[in-house]
Amino acid sequence: TEYANILVEQQGRVGLVTLNRPSALNALNKATMEELVAAVTAMDSDPGVGAVVITGSGKAFAAGADIKEMADQGYMDMYLADWFRGWEDFARLRIPTIAAVSGFALGGGCELAMMCHLIIAGDNAKFGQPEINLGVLPGMGGSQRLTRAVGKAKAMDMILTGRFIDADEAERCGLVSRVVPAADVVSEALAAAGVIAGKSKPAAMAAVEAVNAAFETGLAHGVQFERRLFHSLFATEDQKEGMAAFTEKRQPEFKHR
Ligand code: HXC
Image (cartoon, rainbow, N blue to C red; front, side):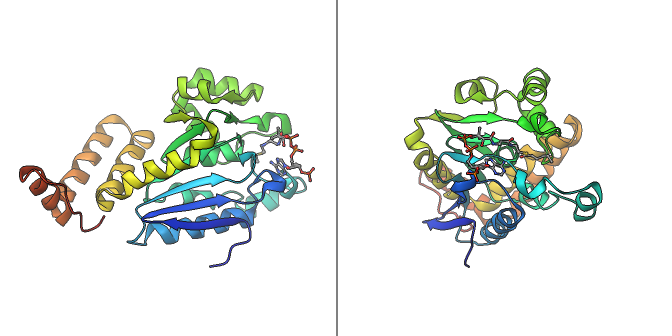
C-alpha cells in the first residue's frame, strides 16, 4: 500500500511505522491518522507481525494534532465529524505497540504515545500537553490517559501550564518505560518489539487487554476479567507448547508466534 504521510517497513516479525511529515514536525492531520490506523490495523490481523514500533522522522515524534487543519473549524464541524474519533480505533488495537519517542511528543503526539502500549524515550524527548496555549484542552484522551499514567499532580501541572517535561522527568513520573540515548531509541524499540514478537501473539494480545482493563475498570472487575482471559489461554496450542517446553527444559516453539 502507498501512503503519503507515513513510512511502513517490516523487519522480521516487527512492523515499523514512521510518521513522515517532518516539515510540519509530523503534525497529526486527518490523513495521517487514517493512514496510521490503516497500516497498524493490517498488522494487527497479520500473523506474520507480532509487534509494532511507531516513531517519527526528523526532530519530533509528533508536535500535536495539526493546528492549521483545526484552526477554522466550528463547533458543528467538530461535532458532526466527531473530530479525533478515529483515534479510538488506534487505541483499541490488540497487537503490542511501542512508541519510540525522539524529540517532541506534544499535544496529540504525547496522546498518541500514550495510546501505545509502551513508550521508549530518547534522552532528547520532550513531552507536553500545550493545548492550553491554544485556548483549548487535550482532545485525544490526554486529560484521561496522562492522569492515569502520572497521577493528578503532574497531569494538572502539565495540562494547566503547558510545561514540557524532559525524558528524565517522564521516567521519574512513570510516563515512559525506558530512557536510552537518542541515537538508540528506534533500535532499542525494535529490539523490545522483537522480544515481544517472539512470544505467543494471543497471549500478548490478552496481556494488552488485561493491562488496559486496569485503566478502564475497577479492581474487582479487572481481576475477574484477567482470570477469565487466563482461563481462555488454556484453549491455545501455545499454552500447551509453552508449558511443555518448560518441563522439557527447551525453548518454546509457539505456533501463533
Ligand atoms: C501544525 C505544526 C505543528 C502542529 C509544528 N508545526 N507543530 N503545524 N500543527 N501541531 C509546524 C510549524 O507551523 C512549522 O511550519 C513547522 O512545523 C516547524 O515548526 P517550528 O515551530 O518552526 O519549529 P520550532 O521553532 O523548532 O518549534 C517546535 C515546537 C513548535 C516547540 C514543537 O512547533 C510548537 O509549539 N508546536 C505546536 C505544539 C502544540 O501546541 N501542540 C499541540 C497541538 S493541539 P512552517 O510552515 O512555519 O515551517 C493538539 C491536541 C488538539 O495536539 C486537542 C484540541 C482540539
